[in-house]
Length: 98
Image 1 (cartoon, one colour):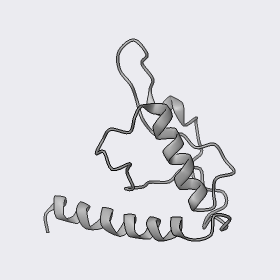
Image 2 (cartoon, one colour; image 1 turned 90 degrees about the horizontal axis):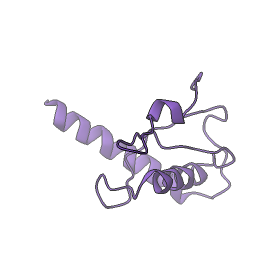
Image 3 (cartoon, one colour; image 1 turned 90 degrees about the vertical axis):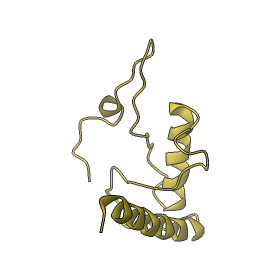
């Protein structure tokens, strides 16, 4: 199986899994209460256009809320270039990550 097909299958399974979590009660307990990061394949429907870092952060916060982990502040792992350079690693802190 090619890497591309494998990634597409994994991303689809993740999207279905996270989509079903988001559809559950908004106050659901997180699966891992100490989690400090998560990976998602649920986009905004515009490809890689997340609307900037602030919009990406809002999207992450909404996904975490849907999974019962909205009590923390979540940041998208994104960098910017140009005059307002921001490093993604700097945005998420020094860890440890769970």
